[in-house]
Amino acid sequence: MKFLSLIGVELQKIRRSKILLILFLATIITWLPSILHADMSFNAIVSPEEDFFIQGFMAVVWFMFPATMIVNTVLLSQTERTNRGILKMLTLPVRTGTLCAAKFIILLLIAALQMLMTTAMYFISAAIVTQIHNYKFMLSPLFVLKEVGIIYLSSIPMIAVFWMLSVFIQTPIFSIGTGLVSIVPSVLMINTKAWFIYPMCYPFYVITSGYGDGSISISEIETFPWLPVAAAITLFCFIISCLRFGRAERRSI
Image (cartoon, rainbow, N blue to C red; front, top):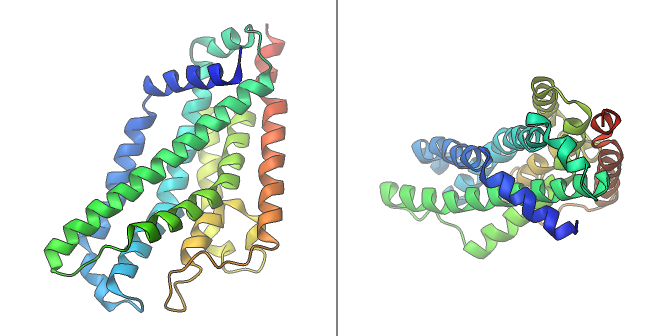
């Protein structure tokens, strides 16, 4: 089976799952507090429109986005274990590593979709509070898309770690619990010089990096040693996941 065909099969599974509903609900829930408390942005050290952007996306990248990805990762993994579907997939003329890679690509697409939905909700929320407070809360679309793109790219190593955990830990409750626990130290790690060794803090570090100096430009972060370490972590987690994926089920065939 060709790799693109596998991607198509996985996309069909996503359409029948609850993943898209979870993304939609998470997006709505995340931005409601920002709309209700938009007046607090007038007291920030940056401009109100910049603070509205930062506060909204801080809530997204610190907890909601990682938590949603943890749940979606487990759901994506469980689509194969429900009714022993993984055994049927493993009987196909396809390597387990290829199947794992296809699922990881789908996971990245899910993450991209969530960030797009979050961005769309930002613009909707900014338009709403603009009307409520008679002040323009909306930033330049090009600026917002650029910054969100950087946040998404910075989250890829984190997603690779979550995927590896879901492959190793087959019990859903333990997999979700382990992932959620890994989010907590991110607040502490961004304040250390070794933040780049902890992928779960990458998106949060990116969005908060320029806030303290009265700026929200997050595209000037020092890339060394961050990028080499991030690339190494992503590659390591991906390779280990591909080697491990389906091993237990294949032994039972």
